[in-house]
Length: 393
Ligand SMILES: C[S@@+](CC[C@H](N)C(=O)[O-])C[C@H]1O[C@@H](n2cnc3c(N)ncnc32)[C@H](O)[C@@H]1O
Image (cartoon, rainbow, N blue to C red; front, side):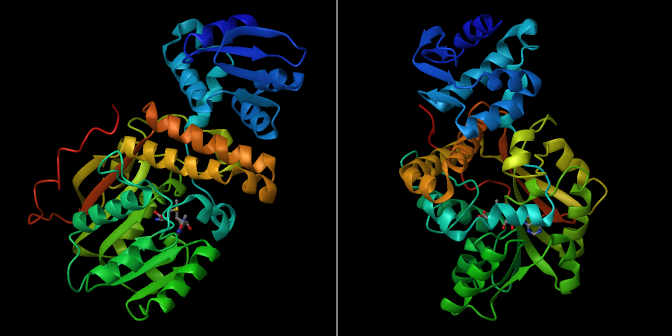
């Protein structure tokens, strides 16, 4: 059975595939070599393929000598194109890893983001933005691409004098801090992470933005308690935490704190159609996260007073963002292994590569939904630019 599986899978992995088993047997030949160090790997993958692969990869019981991204890409292709017979092979579930995120409870969100500002600053750009950037051209730096993403958001939100902007899930504050410097507006950000909250508070002081920028450590459901109303709202990379069955409630809250005629830009990873989510990612990276489909987002606003203006898909931009995060992550690999341990390194490596592959192969997308509260007819009818240079040759 293993021989057949390797032979079939090898057809889909660029450069071919060989597998070296714990007993010294080598099956197949190719550029990518999978080393299986422990007989438990096979047992656990058969029992629970996705979790089995993920956990043994983290522990180093499975090693990929060659390109992990190409290997995972091959696996997805194999599962997609491999025909009816192959769909029942154990590896099918393994690539569920390529889904992302699902709703998490407060403590779980904190566990992820409070890993420490130091850890994230090792591989994020200098604005500490932890979401998809926009690469105007393939040679943009990550810093430039994150800045470009913010510019697009400000334009889509038509920021102008006197606006009150809310950022739900503001992270390390790049939007609320920068937009308040660029426009005569006031901004408010909320986050569940104590580290992010302290960091943003300090930046507000350092940059003399007191009175114009506020940050709160709070759950979005508590927003109405602030007693504030906003005419512009943005949420970037946070909706993935909201969770199945809670999307409608999220929009109800946003509607409560928005003024009529206001604009809401929702930037989220998503799926075109509802599909399965990764149990491994939920256990180790984003416990509880859920990636909504377009349909689920639109269904959630159906009976509310939001009117859809535009949907944009930045799928390949997230692939490039992840590749850049990964490049930076690898460049500090030895330090990460020493400080956080080998298993932690391998867990984050797998998460970043699997995520990159999920955008490359089209399982995941990055959507920007733009809604108005009520019908707004004085919105520009054209996007900033329809023609972007090709990102992929
Ligand atoms: C992926 S980060 C994105 C941060 C930032 N928007 C960016 O683009 O860099 C998700 C953010 O959502 C926040 N978050 C997650 N669940 C939340 C909740 N229930 N209420 C408020 N914030 C939440 C996290 O604390 C974190 O700041």
